[in-house]
Image (tube, rainbow, N blue to C red):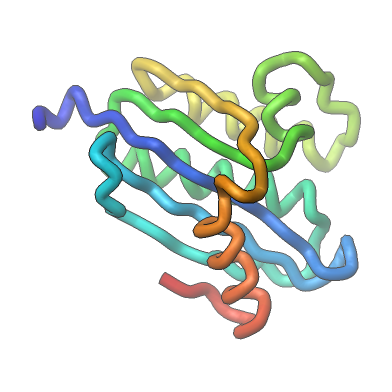
Length: 141
């Protein structure tokens, strides 16, 4: 597959215990044929669930950019994140506005960017990485 045609399907999740509390971001990146090319659980320290969701998106987009992806399809079980990124909801919280702006900027690097809401059942791998990182209090790969 030519580098300029790389299409990635990425499952992301973020979670916090306590909200705010110990938090992590989970990212699972696959090629179109389902091959995992990257997965990580990123420990974030104490923060909110919504910040963790945005941090998972930012980590996913930064990694996809480093992999020279041309097209990125994000799948998230965070309805808030998806609706904010698609313009259905406004970003009202000031602490999320900066993360939103960063995500929009990174999304613009790709020839094609899409984001869709999936059920928690369809996001188990990313959720598993979030829980591993929180349980261990460190990032995992």
